[in-house]
Length: 68
Picture 1 (cartoon, rainbow, N blue to C red):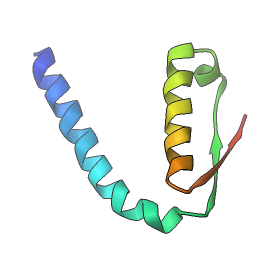
Picture 2 (tube, rainbow, N blue to C red):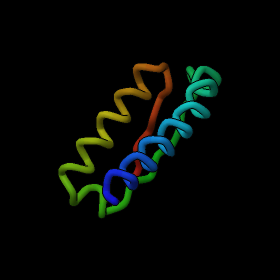
Picture 3 (cartoon, rainbow, N blue to C red):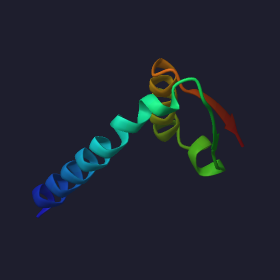
C-alpha cells in the first residue's frame, strides 16, 4: 500500500516538474516574492529543503525575495 502511495507521489511530482521546467526560463531575471509562515521556520528539516529550493531558483537566474 505504501509503495503505491509513494509511486503515485513520485509520478505526480514528475508531472508537476515537467510542466514547470519549460516555464522557468521565462522567469530568468525576474524577482519573485515568496511568503513563508511560522510553520516552515519552526521546522528545521522543512526550512532546509526550502533553502535548497531557493538556491535552485537563484541558480536558474530567478531572484527570490523571502518575506515573513
